[in-house]
Image (tube, rainbow, N blue to C red; front, side, top):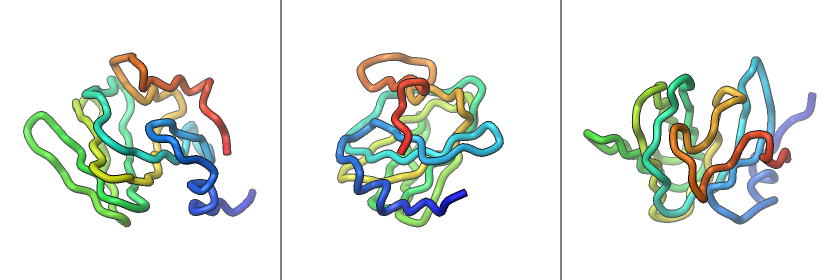
Length: 121
């Protein structure tokens, strides 16, 4: 048991769309990631995801609307809901999701990061 300092974790990397695992609990992983630009449209068949914005402004696009999430706010995307995160400027966020969650959900491509290959900080 150790305190996790999010600022220190975010200072350890500068790339985008590459989550790192910082903790695990009850079958869930806590991940930190920096975003910039548009991600891919995707959904998760079996997992809900929580996006907690630490800095910046995240736009979460859904097929019927866009939600804007500011620093200190979060959004839960329920399983099965198609979505696309968009960061017009850099966003630092924390993800809470089941340990088996693939970041690109039902699609694979150059932004796909399999969990077994994720770095642990």
